[in-house]
Image (cartoon, rainbow, N blue to C red):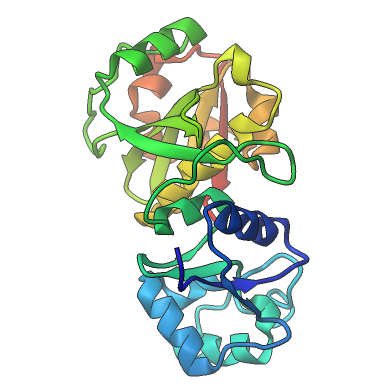
Length: 281
């Protein structure tokens, strides 16, 4: 593959992982170290437009003057935000990758696979030691999904059932680049919210950070279609989900749509922990 460009920050692990995967796929992309050579306002506006994202979603908060500048104030227009990003390039989230297939903010780094004409051959690990993952949409009646959930002791009775106010649940199967199956995950669309469900990693694939990456990729797919907050119920994995950014919540903090799901109404044990987090990249 030729003609790729990466807006790269060499100090960012996600950016380095994306660069490594592009090279593994057989391309040496044009590298723009945007902190040293920021894109012009017109170029930045064009990239954001091609990504089909609101300007605000491309702002980076961590390690930037976002809070100091008060950028969470809705008074800032897209034009204002572009001006601020050009003046403070650290506010541009990274890495942004351009190929013939499109433009994307590649967070988590696995998202860059969407921009490649074909999957690279063979597994490759990220710097932190966990493998890059592919995610393939599957249906709720997929027998492998049902078997995996049953083996993990997770609910299957409501697969494919849509309660009032719910969208159709989305499910994914996850594999390494070499085709090794490493888990499943899904979510129930609830307007601006989602209920994360059916997250499972087989015992043989545990201990490598796969679950963390799986959840990050699952939330990314929800974020891409406009969801803003994730909820879940867990009886035994609260520690895992806390590491993924979720925090315990009381039920009176949850929207009615979450409380109306079969999981909240009885499929999950009454002592299950309710958790939530903002969906961001």
